[in-house]
Amino acid sequence: MDTSLAHENARLRALLQTQQDTIRQMAEYSRLLSQRVAVYASEIKRLKALVAK
Image 1 (cartoon, rainbow, N blue to C red):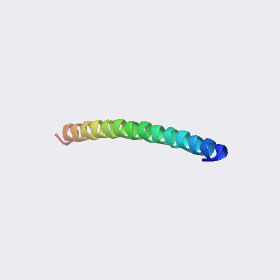
Image 2: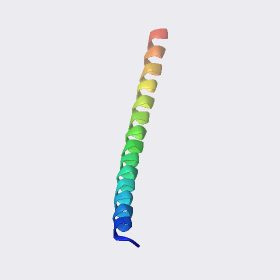
Image 3: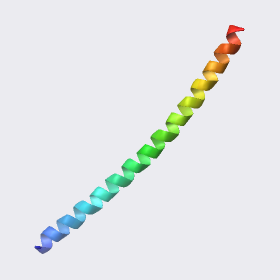
């Protein structure tokens, strides 16, 4: 393999790894936000029930 092609291959692999790491971090952040939304929804439901009494 040509040296410049090997260098480009390594560069693209590093870029791909960085993007995959970012996607994993975003997925975890999304999961945490979803949990918070569920907690807020539960609290809203509880408060609505109190108001309805």
